[in-house]
Structure formats: C-alpha cells, structure tokens
Image 1: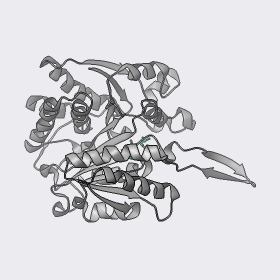
Image 2 (image 1 turned 90 degrees about the vertical axis):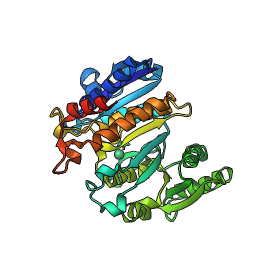
Image 3 (image 1 turned 60 degrees about the vertical axis):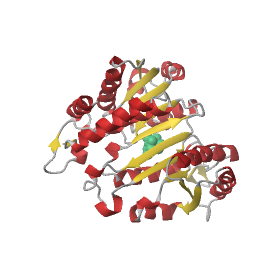
Length: 353
Ligand code: IPM
Ligand code: MG
C-alpha cells in the first residue's frame, strides 16, 4: 500500500504527523505500507511556484491512496486565482477523478454537550453526506470576471451531465443500502434547471434500489432541517457546492469540525483522505489542533481503499476510548476534562491502539 502524504499548510503538518504515527504503528503490526511525502498547496507554491506541481501529480498518480492535511493561508490570499493553494486541491480532485466525497458526521456520545445544539437534538446523530466533487459550479465553464457595458460582471456556470449525476447517485444508494436505508437527495429544482435534472436522474436511478427509501429536499429546507431535526437524515446526496456548505453545517452538530474525516473516491476506490476542516492558520504551530479528524480519515482510507476493515475499526475504537478517557483538544474541551495538545492527543490514540 503506497500512501502519498501531502501535509499542506497551517496545521496540516501537525495533524498528518499524528496520523502518520498511527499508520507506522499499524505497519509494525504487519500492515505492509509505505509513506511518501509530497507538496501541495501553499508550501508547493513556496517551493515551486505551483500549488499542484508536476512531481506531486506523478506521486499521487502512482500512489494507491493519498493522505492530505489542509491547504491555504492568509499568506497566499493575494495570489492570482490559478496560483492559490485551493486550486491545488481542486486540481488533484479533478486529476484523480475523485468524484465521490463521503463526509460522515457522527456525534460521539461524550461530545453531546460540546455541540452548540441541545444534546437531545444531536445525541445519536449519524449522518453520511455524499457530495459530488468534480463537477457543478466549481468547475463549470464559462467562468470569469469581465467588463461588459462599462461595468464588471462576474459569472460561473452550474452544470451537471446525466452521467455525473447517476454515478454519484449510485454511490449514495449503495451507501444507504449498507446503513439504515434512507437517502435524501438535496437540490434547488424550484429555481435551477441544472438541479431539476439532478432530481430527475436521481429518481430514475432509484428504480434500481427499491430497498432504499428515497426522498428529495430543497437545499434551503435541508439547511434548516439539519439544525431543526438532524436525526431524520441517514444519507444525504447532493452536488458539489450544496455539499460543501451542508457538510460544514453538519460538522457543527457533532461538536467540532475538528472531528470530521472524509474520503474522496474514484470509481476504483482509489482515494484521497482528509479532514474536512481547513489549515487553521490562527493555531498553526501551537500544538493545539485536533488530530482526530485526520486520524479518522486514515481509518476511512484503510476501509475504502485497502479493505482493511479490522485495522479501520481498531483506529475508530481507539478514538472512542480516548474520548471516553476524557482527553480533549481545545476545540472540544469542557471543564473537568483533560486538555491536551495535538501530540498528546496522538499519544493517547496510540496508547489505545
Ligand atoms: C472543502 C473545502 C474546499 C472546497 C476548498 C478549500 C476549496 O471547503 O473541502 O470543503 O470548497 O471544496
Ligand atoms: Mg468546505
């Protein structure tokens, strides 16, 4: 198992550092894996002028899976759009055809009181957001800022093909089948033709999954329902932009965005694994970041790309134990708990592994 490790910027190196320790511990237990570091995002811009340099492209193409920290930071905000760290992330997703982004939002019982929502609303929460990741307004053309009739006009194109919708729908139906069998497709068909097609294709795909209970919801209502009664959801499937927004919202139900892992998969289960949070430049280098989302991303990697279910469960159980033992990074801290930094949190997970 060849794993490319792209630590990225900000807290990226700190959190991937802890995740690597977990992988190395599993290697000493007999898992055959190799870690290969590479540059993506702002650190790559610093080193080569490009957010996704050729050498990184080669590395990730050859790897079986990619572990990513986070990219971006204020230092790069002034760069032209094509040189921004985020472009590196979008380019790697597109290059590897990682169209299926799985973002589970699970509330660990120990963190019920950390959520900004009432414990009785969020306890037992277990949602999977399936976000399409290589299409939509993120990649649609034409796009740009132009001068027209003496003023500037900004424009983007929201576009989905039937094939793009049906392949992500299949991923979502299959995921729902393995869970509680509920799938809610989120769109804005009352206004946008692109998402009318989305609803039509998802509905047609449903014929192949009579055992899955499909519903549809408009995105504004979905945003409201996620905070009103989030436990009504099992699997949510939606496009790239709505999925970006709803997954950040869902993360807060679980107490902290620092807890949420993700997998971005192609049609062969090759994948890129990353926490859903960003590079958090404000706490970078301070040994404060929560490494659990990245460590849980490694569990997803072992499960989805390498079919190592047992190793994945070992990591997930270790994380649960660490929470039960009261270890908390700053983002999930409550009085009475043991406040730890990034490295100590890594130590605690290793000890339980
Ligand atoms: C995410 C992030 C990215 C996105 C950014 C950093 C480009 O917000 O992975 O959710 O919008 O997809
Ligand atoms: Mg996002």
